[in-house]
Image (tube, rainbow, N blue to C red; front, side, top):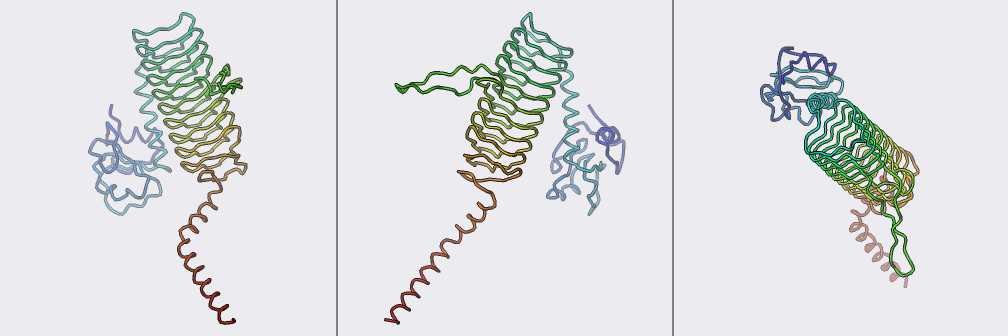
Amino acid sequence: MTFTAAQIAMLINAKIEGNPEASVGSFSKIEEAKEGQLAFLANPKYEEYLYTTGASIIIVNDSLELKGKVQGTLLRVPDAYTAFAGLLAKYQQMVSRQLTGIQQPSYISASAKLGEQVFVGAFAYIGENVVIGNGVKIYPNVFIGNDVVIEDNTIIHPSVSIYYGCRVGKNVTIHAGSVIGGDGFGFAPQADGSFTKVPQIGNVVIEDNVEVGSNATIDRATIGSTIIRAGAKLDNLIQIAHNVEVGNNTVIAAQAGVSGSTKVGKNVMIGGQAGIVGHISIADGAKINAQSGVSKSIKQPGGAVTGSPAYDYTSALRSQALSRRLPELEKRIQELEAFIKQLVSEKV
């Protein structure tokens, strides 16, 4: 498929600077782009490539002031990164719409209800009383247990498992290998030192516009629901334990883990490999640095923490600055001790 600058400008509400008939058929990074490709410039760090790139069309910010001649056609928008992301999303939708129908072999229960324009890949399993909305794409080797509901335009990538009774909203993307609704880690210690499993009879609810990365695990609740609120984005290799609630538009980077019954507010940012203990709350807008260990509630909205155990980010920076000065401070203390010793000896 090829598109002209004029067509792309209509899609992203851009102002054209150059040839409106310039056409592209693929995307590339600005430093590597060739004729017939589209690139974008959002980070000033890469501006030098704007004047050497072979890209036929480049999306740039309205505020950009040119420092030289540009070979390609510019599309000016308020935010180049957001516009480029939106364009990629539209392109992806166009490609995915081509996938419809049911491949064989696959198993679909007679009691399952499938909407229009649904795609079911080979070796998929769809259990009893499953409800699948319009435009849903289910790739090969996906398992969908009994009584699951998946709403419109959601994409389930290969080898995802969604256990019984879970709910997945509209425009959700779940990437390959993720498990939704596996048992929460609940075991009751016994007098003899053994553990008795606590049945996990709740479910997982994923609201609209959520993205779940590859090989992530979201455990079902013991009772009630583990909830991922609308707009949340979860990276690869994330563990969300039973009865956790992740707030709207919260983002969690790879290898982070949230323990049972913790409530994470909206617009929270959690860095990679961070660990959060159970039964605490994280205030709206909080920021948790990578590899932090959060052992108590963050009550201040917008607060930032780092370290393990995690504490206030600004205080941590001060502590780090002081720790770097410890050799100098030790030397000064030794000098002061020697000076005091000399004063005492002189008085004697």
